[in-house]
Image (cartoon, rainbow, N blue to C red; front, side, top):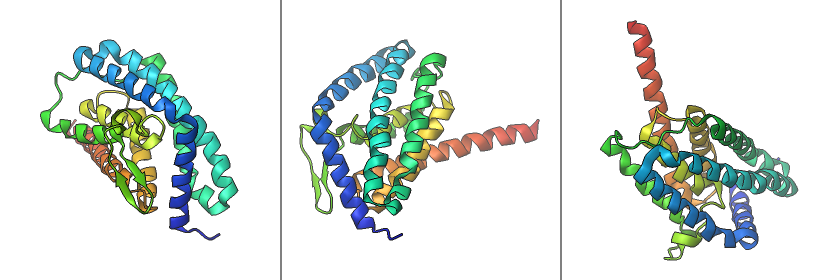
Length: 231
């Protein structure tokens, strides 16, 4: 089976364009709702975490429908080698959606931000990049537009959407939903790296976020291991 990274990148760009043609008008809705929820969380913390969870459960249901179900059909038609390259995305999207649904029931996410260490707020830069996710033409470059603040691919694509949610979750980690945190981190590392290697440059910050989240996971596990040894 022959695999050409450039073909994958070009087809990926086509896949994104198809979605924007079909659902691009939803972009402003995703942005406006998220702005309201983020401001509510910043002001009132966990009082609005249920709203946050319900919204992103619905958002990931949409993402799984297009990037998971339709994505499998799309890449199957292109070729087996490209489908194998893509297959991890729908698997992870399903697991992420399943755990968002569980989060609605169990409410493990923690958005009390009063004790967050100040250095952790650097992820706000990545969060804003994901939210405004600038227009990118494959093989040509970026087209930065003010309209991206409300009409970007955020909410339509898993990568920028994950940048926003995972960035928020790193603030309080290890408090919160660790299973969901681990899955989002895995998505950032594997899918983000694959898209960057195929030439999709906007996901470079996504990969860095995945690396940072992985470091947090490793440090937390080492901390618990040291405690176990000392006891």
